[in-house]
Length: 301
Image (tube, rainbow, N blue to C red; front, side, top):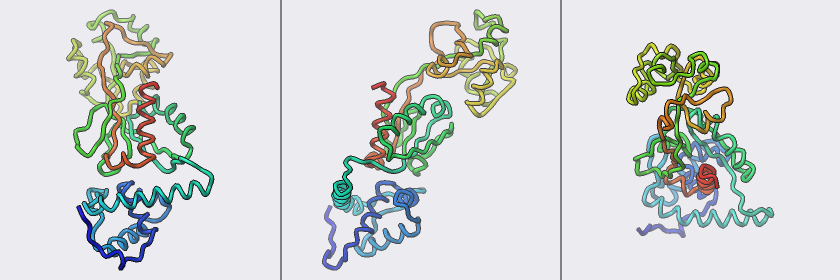
């Protein structure tokens, strides 16, 4: 593709070019404005002024985010080289090298955010103190295409072509209950005995009842006297000896107040975890750094 423009008629303004570069890397004016420490309207005016100067659009709007036009993609290659050169100049002048700074948002389920991510984030911050992390702890799926998060940890591989996904690991889930509750039940030796126990799920009837009944249980709504849409609340109720629930080994086996409900040696379920980001953000240095670091941490490298 060839872009035709009269460069002699353009008065180059690096601030406008940088506004374009950061907006392209961040994927939205709001995120770019936060990264550059300016207001969104000011940043928008700089990008619009650059578009007016060169005579073509650089972005098209997609949901809450922006998508580069074909001309924008072509121009980005040149502006990114200019940005790299400017960064190297700044680093050399300040005596720094290979510094990565800025915000990165990560979304993951409540359980992963509470029990698995904190030591990883601590290690990341020690290595990259310039990267500031925002964690969205939610069981709802945030839309990466709309830039509702930069990186997601999910239990289902995405199918959207705009998203990049890498398998992290497999986690195995089991039934767990407080030791006090298992003693109260007399350590049930069979599924038939467990059909008399109380369980906790997110709704009535919920996925846990469906899963267990598919594996030979005969549970009804009466087996679920307490429900909560929060997995953290569920886990606390289990620790208090209220009922039984399912969780992954990395969480259940590390809690001294609970035990596995052992009917067989087989796991209740095996789940693959995936790390996901938007393909445009994969070229952002700090997004790439966090993405690769999380892959390494889950692999135990």
